[in-house]
Length: 531
Ligand code: SF4
Image 1: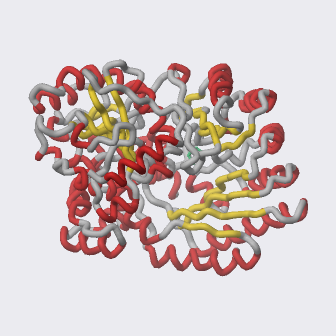
Image 2: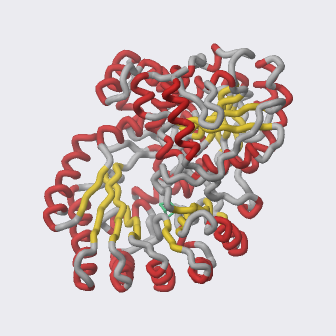
Image 3: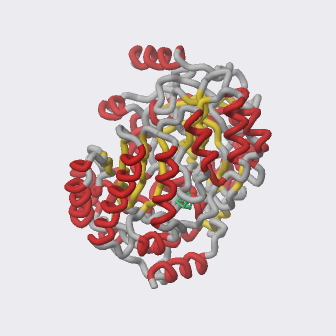
């Protein structure tokens, strides 16, 4: 075991507030794993929530593990932060998976830990390996051969049901434990699945459990903020959106709870980060921001809905020191915004940007997607025109405001009306991206984009089945050429997963799940979008 790794873990811990260190004696040890770096993982509220939830049980000790790029490259066996023990010492490994491209890290993490990769090769001598998170809730199939059980739903309602079964069965026969887990709501056990749909579980009342920063550290992306989850799910029903479709229904935390969490947070940080898919949708958002400002809080939020966007919200955010406002028009043309059901017009966008300009905010970020269904070069021209119009509105008001466009290729997500649609081939996306690159940076608009080539990979992972798992196992090096070699070796039909429009008769890999939304509804939504 590397002394260097132990030293690094201790250094990290020394910079944290809120770490929970428990004695292992008589407790069930669970490793909570985020398959990416500490810097990324510690800004993920899911990790904070599950860590504090698991450690709230006296009979459980939960520690965290991350997967740093340099350790990955050298396959250095990972350690848990709190005790610096190897992963093989734990009874349970619990992965939280939020991003498809982290699937590669799941495989390399298990390999480096010396734990058999396939669930079928593990027995009572090995930890039980489980997973949850947005990617698993949408489509657990590509990773399913590696996990003993997959949690289809939110942690709050599921952990209280799973943990007693785990505690009771972990020292017994593995097959008995798997059978017991498979009988629980929302739990998918690939090796003991009955064939009945696995019903997604969700928390009825967000007030039952605060979701906020548990551990404070400067060594993470949002390290200067105390994060508070304001809401979950989203009612707007954009047709590409996983949040809207797999995290239904929309739920809000009450004003009282949010204020009491804020009081706690302000003991640790001067600024609060309000997190949610559409924070400005909270029915008491204005009261909340006014009260937080009266408490002296600095404020920051995740992306705001273009409409409604009230002046009071913008005023309080500006006075609370927010430097950046993020809006997501997603498409430049009204035609495409209607197809994706964004529910906003060009006038709405320009009006909101006008309001942003009134409050002298320093930076406006706009999110757009490329490769949306039926997109043409004219639609991309409309992104350019819209961005330039937004810039002229800001420039009229004050100089020195930065405007940044974040461009993501459209990737179809399981469980959404667009799940049957293909990813646009990378050469077309690259050509359209070059239109943006040619037009916007010379006019003073910053452009950031995600790689079209990797979006193709993401598309395969998002709509994949167990055949994709074989490719993940055969990757020698995580790079596009490593991916292509593994795909060729496993004879995976990339075209089918990424670039073909599936018809409604096609059996979906994730048909084993019952997300709560009827397939017929998704079909109607897709028909409405495209006709
Ligand atoms: S508003 Fe945002 S979070 Fe809500 S459905 Fe649309 S894209 Fe998803």
